[in-house]
Length: 370
Image (cartoon, rainbow, N blue to C red; front, top):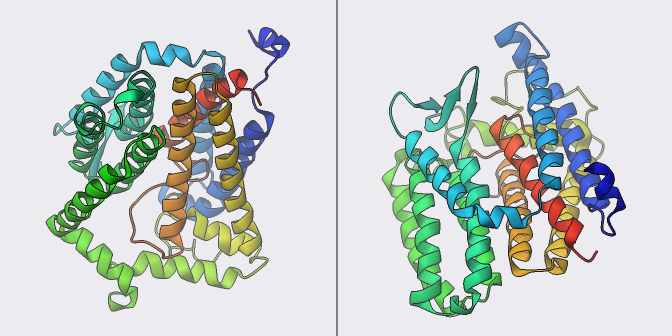
């Protein structure tokens, strides 16, 4: 099949693939650099997190190249079944004894020695289904009753189940991604203005309904009010970024990973990257994500049909929005949400599903006129 692909007139987008592999390789280096102190302390094995990340990345890369060979139109045919499975997984994770609690959220299902996060599956599953829905019913999207509201009901049903875990970060990525897709499909601005008003009210109620969310807001506004409690993570993150300066302290020379910044290999890995590689390394990483966004949009615009366009757009927006939220949290622009940095942060189902998404995007690029 690979030989046949090489003979095709259109090839997978080489620039996109190069960007992904650079980000993935950078992630491997930074996961080890940020985690070996914690790994030595907790597991008596400095390579504990690196070995698992290599395994996750290996599975993800195999899946990425496998998905690259699957015609993207295939996903449209099975979109209903995929979405149904995703909803079933979201319901299963809420059952006590089935869902595993980590970091205060019941977001995981154990599978042998490993675990999966159903909300990660839902992000991709909903993008696939919504792409098919918008492609076949785009003419109704300007109608509040026939197009806009049905899409919203679908999106916010998934969001509601994710919030029951609760996982606000993943929920925000899902909602923002789908809203961009619906907007690009041609929904009326007046409908979005009404949604924005309702969204602000709903968001305020979400924050008020959970004391820890209020604490995160107050910690964001003034982390020094509780420097050893809710403000601890963001203060330690800024302590990492500030001393890094232009050139950084050097790879492996971070001070904050010495038990100051909790679990630095996950949500706050960008802080360690900035500390060790400086502003140059930080801006280089941000530049890679901007290149990924540009390349993904180009693939979307040149896709041969509406399904391919919406599918490519949804995937690249999902990756970019997640990166923007993570980096914004790390540098103190928004409150802590608990979301990983794509390709760089340590994680199993998150990294694997991200690479699967990229495989689908690469397949769309094969058929695009780029």
